[in-house]
Length: 497
Ligand code: ADP
Image 1 (cartoon, rainbow, N blue to C red):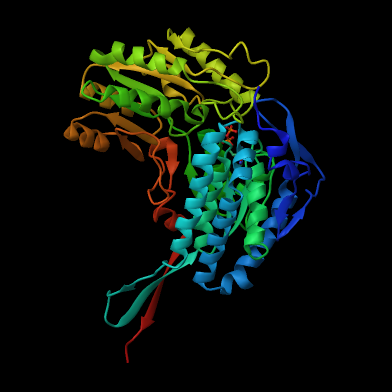
Image 2 (tube, rainbow, N blue to C red; image 1 turned 45 degrees about the vertical axis):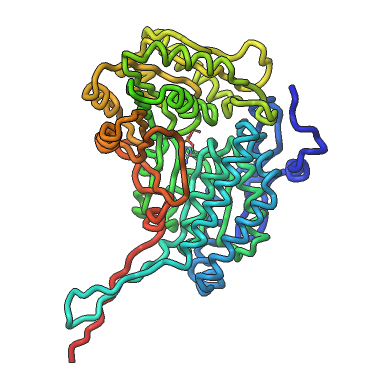
């Protein structure tokens, strides 16, 4: 298979070493001395070994982060200097964009074009956006009572633990670090065990950018019984921010009760993507494909339930199948690849199992449905479209986190609105129509944190993102993330003689 030539492999030097933890500005081995492998999901080859941090290492990282938060250059530096550090980091990421894109694709499996044109630039933009916020944080004065001068201070929360998933490793890191650092917090990041590499490389760049020791710490390792759990339990961490599965979110919330740390959760989804008969059908077909197959379907806001108005069902399906048949699946490092492998064997098996469950429930495989026969290595699952689905089946209710689209026909607006909301999740949804009233009506009817109208998967660091219902709480991005990472203090000054 055509992959990047070794001499073009910009991350070769980085991959040649065993990766360490970043604690207090130094790269150190895990106290236990343990390491784990990270694997290229397209080839199943080991990329390199990574330190396996555990509770002891988290304790050290928290000590460093606490010291850096309470005293030293970070606490006293001007907000303009803080902004400059974030801008320095954004510049260094941009300068090393090709290397980071290669590393992301090797570790996660996603097509190199997506790493290069989506993940890296959005990471850079997120850091630049939040650099702007560092100098714009404000309190307020309140005219409550003329006998008192009353004002609020907006202060950083403190030491923040951030636990991120493997689907957008560097971008999720930027969503977490950007606002936390802009507000003056110190952080301990735990990347997903499947994809730790870009966070570690960006950690090196953060040190080069000039962040003081202890402000940014990275503890790689596992979740339950590992560094992840240690972060959520830690009594000296003031806040934990998590993106991942709903089941894990519940565990993190339970573990956090010891010191009642603040928790923000961005969890799963089962997004309805609704196409009315009056829509631009070709655009909606493309949108359905982006909605479910982008990043191999490993997207929490993936449009995994496609609701088609009955009168256009057959025309839509013909066009959809034609396009899906043209998608080139392969190693993400190949420039021609549209869809890469799932991130791990575990995920591949989970997705294939869901396809079997759907078939058992009576769904029909219209495209794909298995691992491609010609791929001897790698965790591939064909882009899959299932018809004959109804909204109560498990395939329409549970998050698959893979390239599997469940198609559900509908007759009326009321019926589809009810079904769209008949899920425990509420992260996102989309509607395709030329009728502006219908579009706005749907935007208000659907219980979800993001609604796309005649588009899908559009993002900007200025626009908030997060869930209703079991998709979590708290909003990331935009000014809303500033709320997650700051505390408000009210100050009363007696003005009476
Ligand atoms: P997946 O099951 O798809 O890997 P998870 O939600 O389990 O998704 O993983 C997202 C992140 O949460 C990863 O960094 C993982 O290590 C971490 N994690 C998993 N389990 C726990 C846990 N019990 N406590 C804290 N972090 C966890």
